[in-house]
Length: 232
Image 1: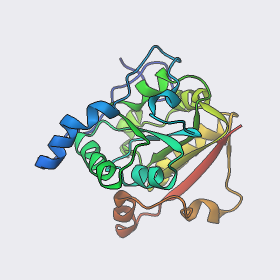
Image 2: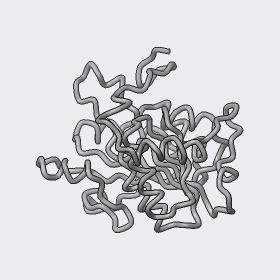
Image 3: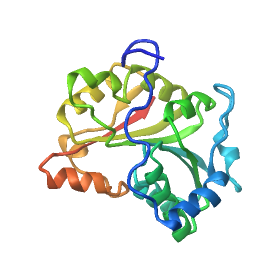
């Protein structure tokens, strides 16, 4: 399916699906553990994610593009009463998350190994208490902007699936993408930006652990922005 970021239609997910060779342990976890954690998608707008967990959860939070899974695993360990959904098409990242799940004994994570937009489309309205999108691929070249994950369609889908008062956290280390994100979020009156001063978006909150990509960006001299929005 084709389209542009702010027009109907959907571009496929771009980027690598696999990287370096997996270790025997990682391959074993993909074979044994992942099948039991995968989310079975349902008809659009019908999936209540709270039923995916083996115990009652206070809320369900979603991380889109969890990378190596360090942020998702940290959040799940710190919030055992929350159910977590992680969407990531990169097999090596999924394998690293599975290692963290095994080592920490985490029982509150479920995985969608594909395009996050397919998962979001399946979710019931107002079922998410928090959403994380941390350092999505910025596609910095102008001709590639249509590949950017955050667009008007995604913002609308998140507005549909987030409950009133839910928080959306987005991080980016590219100034152009930061402006792009702000334009699209502020154009939707269902979201409000939570920053009261520059300090609020220049400093990472204490309950927002650093990822390896963030550390690389800072080491390279790029300044991340930590953007938080509330679903009205």
